[in-house]
Length: 123
Image 1 (cartoon, helix red, strand yellow):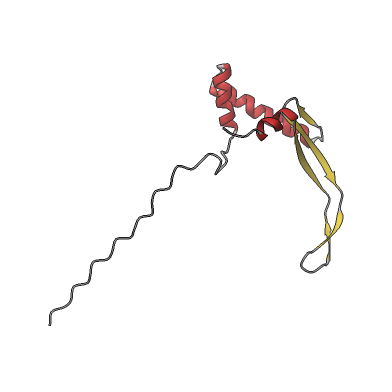
Image 2 (image 1 turned 90 degrees about the horizontal axis):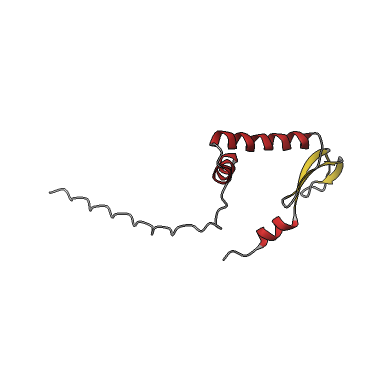
């Protein structure tokens, strides 16, 4: 008897190509280098100098917040460090009392112009 030939495997159907994603689907991550590029374009500085400025500003803001200072940037917003007291909470599954330790938190409150600019509908 002659051996039967195996039937050729069917080619897997390819999924249709996805349409280009909208910018609102996934937020863009912006880092110090991206901010430095904007400074380079606006003020005609070298990339190295612009990155040094951006990095320096963030380092200074971080140092001041660690000291507990309030950072208020006109037209942008306020950064405030708050101390939260220790408290007793409840485990929602068991109802058991749980100690929640004290901690420091960072709060950002946007200024009115920033809030209005962000809340505008995209065209």
